[in-house]
Length: 477
Image (cartoon, rainbow, N blue to C red; front, side, top):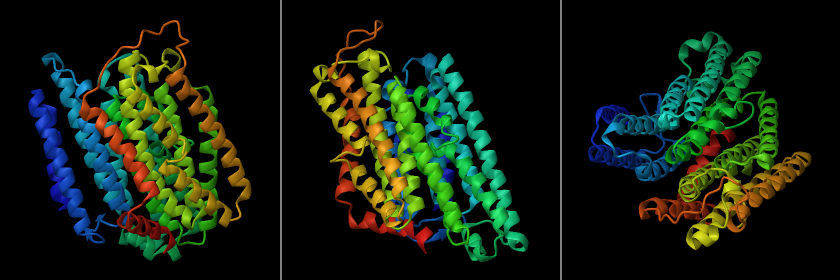
């Protein structure tokens, strides 16, 4: 079935590139979403199985696939404002729809892949697809953001490729058996530790471009700023999750070897320095899209702290990924409405948003609480569990530093959000706020995603807990 989905998704994506009729493009997009939901439903019926030795429907895959399907549905339904209905723009529109379809397909297959080379291939496809989306507006800013993204991600994925080569060297005579996760686990005890350390470092650093972590986090900041809002919602959520899957499956192999404690130290440092960098930038940033892009760096840093701490921290890290994806995608979709109201992405040009619309202002308050992990945010629960895992591991100094940095981050985000909500504009270039009511199909998804993140965090269903526990077992087995 995975091959059937792959062929069908590629076919729909190619069709989008040649279709010039707007109504037909939307029909094909609706068909692609139906295909995505059917495949997701099928994945749950074959939980625990492996197809063609490359694709496994385990807990990690099902969690990430479900999150992707929900957010992709929201992103596709959110695109109408960004697609010009003029016939002259039909080619650009076709490229947008096609790139969105290929991005969704690549993220789906990367989530299922249990072969480190196959995962690398599909994540490389996400780079090409995302670059087409970033380039959508064809202005100097989007051109610059596109080549930066392509350059940074290409360099990063070259590092991943080198890491894969080092893995084959670490396998020694067993390299001929293959580089699937099962093969690596079967030979974990015999892996050469020197080459294994090199492989882990290269793969971790390479995937930081997708995960928005130090050192390659800059690849995604400009991309999320310049991409159309629905595409930015994907880049700030499910694309980051796919990068995590690539790293996490490799980490699951390393966790079964004698270098686990060394790897945990590397992951812990990566997470802590990422939170520090996010705090520094968030204090100074003036662009609302970049504000939430840097917030993603912080949240991925928290995820890495949970992975390194182990225990309940691994469960919390995976759930944190899901909740963050839901929250951040809804916020980026709402930023599109902010831009329509103020005609700017700069915080100084915005003000008195609550007076403009009590409904939208209320959403922004709830979103601010959720993204800063304040009650009733589900992220409050997962961050609490991460801190508990740090205490259980006697990592008191790490916890203290992280809490101080997160306090600074909460202050920085709250300062800017309250400025938008209640204070007047301070920019001489600001315009009078325009009263623009967004279509119901756009705003409804924002509320659905934010409500879903709260519900999953505070009242996690047994079936979701089961999947996340199975995903955590990849490391703890």
